[in-house]
Length: 158
Image (cartoon, rainbow, N blue to C red):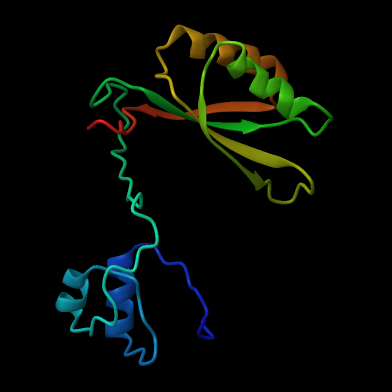
């Protein structure tokens, strides 16, 4: 492998634009051929993805609580108490109701060593009774529970 430094950027077209506008010779961006054409860049390689399942997700964000489509997925943010078994007790609220978690990530809480935020995606809409019951259980267990959003999740048969 080449001696490279990977630099995350806001979006792929923005990376191409940055390289072109700042004259960053010797640098490359993973972007569309359209972005290369717009910014006058040379396409070095095509079809570089390593997974046929690769996909880009988009979100529509609004203050209006009316969903664009029936909600089938909900994203949550949990602040878990820093004590043995607390994550298990939080996740148990979903398992007892047959709610599938399709994502679970942890991120450190700034200025609070060994404490974490947990981001969860649950395959249920915010109006689902089982999810409402699980969230009710979490109120007493988690330090903080926040529903980030409820939306129509991608379905493989679409």
